[in-house]
Structure formats: structure tokens, C-alpha cells
Length: 223
Image (cartoon, rainbow, N blue to C red):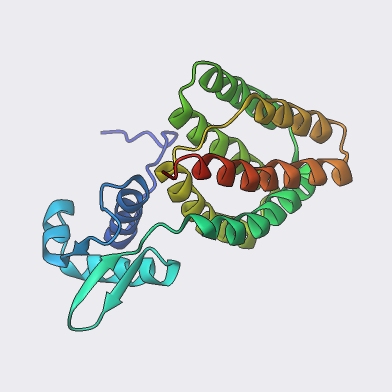
């Protein structure tokens, strides 16, 4: 039979990659609780893989700071340290600012349209107070800029930092405001104008402002 050659080919990932992605997501969203002891046999059974990719994934997660392995004893999910946001956001802000600069030579009409439509979805989530979706779409917006910049080193570092920020924001129910919508719109306009200096500054401020907002929100939860 004739086999079509123009179809979309699925991206194949290894068992280790699949296990790593799922375990990281479960830690981020709290399915695996902070301080919880992890059993590689149970995790392997849940994910339908052998224990080897689970162990390899746990080793990678330890390097990233999501779990702590105690040889001969146990592997535990690390605690969520809200104060780490002060260390996480400045380097992430710098990388995102640089991405905005580097994205300019690679911009296309399609990329601009994607950023605009993503910010429209973000605005809808904020206005309807669907803050969980807003957080996800906000990350999507910034990831588009990183992808356009097309720098594999920045992409890798942003992914690592963003995973920790996602966990902090998820566990502390961060609320994104209308100001972020306006900043996104300004970023898009500056990208259109090819204003590398200003778009870099706005992008950095967009991230650093979150530090004060984060501490302001979490401090109100203390009783």
C-alpha cells in the first residue's frame, strides 16, 4: 500500500524523558507532596516503565533541586521555599530580557500574531479570574519569545528556572494582574518597532515586579 510521506511525524521521547517530565509535573502541581517519600517501584508501576528510567529521572530531579536522595534510605520531595523567589527571578528576568533582544532579528508576522493571540487569551483568563490558566498562559507567552530567540543555551537555562518558579507560583496561588496584560502588549509593540533596548528593560521589569507582588501576597497568608 502507498504510505503518505507528508504527514506530521510524532515526536518520540524516551522512557526516561517521559518519566522525568511526569514526575517533575507531579512535584510542581503538588500531586507528589513536599516531604513525601518516593518509592521507585511504585512510580515505575504507575508510569508503566522499568525502575531504571525512574531512578535516572530521580537523579536528574535531585540535580534540579526537586528531590533529595538519601543513599540506602529514601528519596524525598524537597520543601517549597517561598524565599527562593528572590534568587530565582533575577537570573530568569535577565535571560528573558536577553531573549527579547535576540528575538528581534527572527521576528515574523506569524510570531507577532501568536504573541498577540496568546496575550488575548491571557487577558481573558485574568479578567475572568481564572488565575491558574493565567499562570500557564503567561509562561506560554514568555516561552514564545524564548523560542523565537532560538538560543539553545538560554532555552535550557530558562526551562530549569521556570520549573521552580512554576512550583512556587502554583503552591502560593499567585494572582497575575491587569498590569501584566499591558506589559505584554508593550513588549509586543516594542518587538514590532525593533527597539531592543527598551523591550529588554520592559521584559526585565515584568519579571522583577513579580518579586514584590509574590512577597506581598504570601505575607497576607501568614496568620
